[in-house]
Length: 369
Image 1 (cartoon, one colour):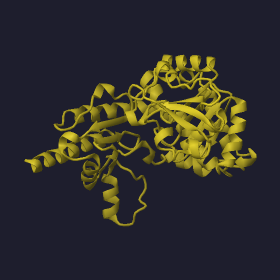
Image 2 (cartoon, one colour):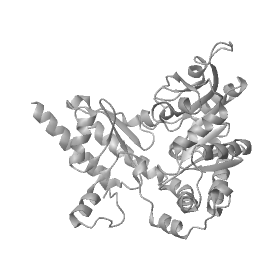
Image 3 (cartoon, one colour):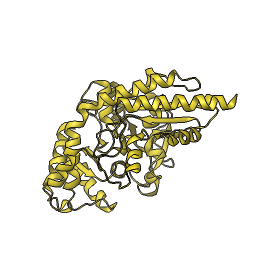
Image 4 (cartoon, rainbow, N blue to C red):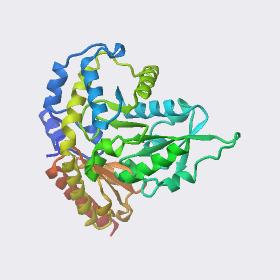
């Protein structure tokens, strides 16, 4: 129930039992590779990927391009590197990148678009993280030589800090159409794009048809241990290979990692609906606890962010209390707590998390009198 370890790596039986009782809802990045992934990694055919000679990496890249309907794909160590590479290719030093205020590229990538790509974020405030063309158009710089120039729009789908909200494909199409007419490029941080596809019941190829580039993670909801992909045109991907090496992401016998990524890409999207259903269980259960606030109707994928101000505890304090009882969560703002469902937490684990959460909140309310 909610196990976070799949092998007995701890020698102390009490420690093993403690680990197995933990329900880790901090993120879908915490998943362990499945037994088939581990076997694929052990048996992977490998070569030197910097020389383009790793057959398992090449197979993964070819398959990712096919699934997205793009000309080519590149395996990169992390999603942050994938986003940075795309920004570097699609902009020039001194350009601005339009993104939502709470987007990952703005908040959680160490200002790499500025420090390394030489660009500045130009903030737009989306409706629950979802930008419309009207919102974007309002912050595009005029074509005046002494103004910074807009070059790129970054969309995030699903949107992490807004609780896994999902872009309607028609909105993405509209943004791409107007952006391209204006001479702008559009990149999607699609770290959880397969969760968005599950929510919409659409293919990722259709959802991303008009985008210039897409990054997606193998190591989040898809459950691989390491790695992300960027997809786009052949010319884009050749440039991406250069920047991957420049940024320190050239790997050698990377097929050991790509083997798990290939299985994740082929098999894991088929089960994401389970994570979404578990997120709904959490959201509805949380909404029924006095002192907590969340709207289950707005939970579209595998992320549940709820308000805890009514408990008298801030998010850090509440997460600390939960952790004492082996329920791990993440604070995302002063009074915002995030639960993320994934393949290593089952329905029973979610129900135990709700039970403990209700117990902890009740205790805080009793203590307040």
